[in-house]
Length: 135
Image (cartoon, rainbow, N blue to C red):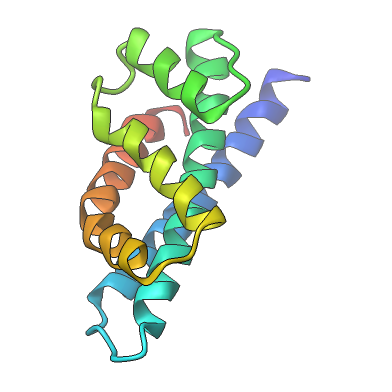
């Protein structure tokens, strides 16, 4: 694929991630409701963010570092190794959180995940800041 096309696609991906991150921020700003609607919405928005984040990081690594990676965990590890982002265990934990959120539903788990979302939001902010240099 031509480099110009890859960079154009990357700019679109950054914009999508930024928009998803903003939607997560909005959900987290809402007061919790007794039925868990806000919590569940925030968790779903987190799932969208993590998917967009790793795919955006995948493109970033290809463009900036000429490194290919095929899975979320491999992309994070490659980004750590290239010092694109700090080696932060919570970033890897976010992948586990996504898997749990997508494949398991238990009330206690939903509460636990929701409590960690503000920290996840900070990581999305950091990822966007680091990757925006390629736009």
